[in-house]
Image (spheres, protein in one colour):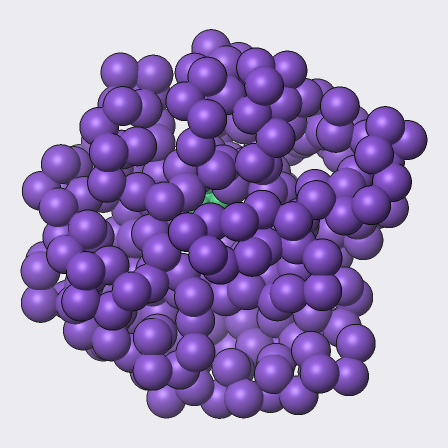
Length: 263
Ligand code: PEP
Ligand code: MN
């Protein structure tokens, strides 16, 4: 179902009036994690003013260490819904398990499946049944073929509102956090009719590399970007080193905009 052989024209997903796919370029931006009401509303204002359509922010955080900040859970979801109320931005936030699909669906516009859950097949079936738009991140060791099959799990439940998100893979290189695989984004555009979003924040782990990789992604035909932005990255509870300041995010939006106009 995900293949271009089955459907040749690009799928365009309508998320509360925002179109993803086709000739549209969308930007999903915001902090790694919802940390407080003030931090989230400030972030929402920044990304809205710079021209993003979606606010991202995790309320349930899949952290490497159990001692790291785990997220505000439903309180965080309430803050995301308030930020939508104030700004009109659509909300994309991660769902980490089957039990929380319904509560996250009650607040969010898009359910994010994180890299660590790309092959959690029961969760894929559950978000498929939910009918909600899904952002399917690439597993950090997943091949393109495995990623396509993960999407197939969602579509096979009757839910065609799926976007892929390239967020980098594990390689021998350890200067960057992951190796952003822009060739996979281009391959998916060829193999599938579904929209492809690129996340250069997790893809590099280094804020200085986010803007050049965002520009490369858009020049290469990506349908959208996911960018981590924090009002004060030095104080972020997670992923501060890859988060853009408001000024740097505005610069990214300006430069990406002129590339998008030329593609
Ligand atoms: C995130 O978007 O903050 C996140 C945890 O991403 P990933 O699943 O790609 O690591
Ligand atoms: Mn993050």
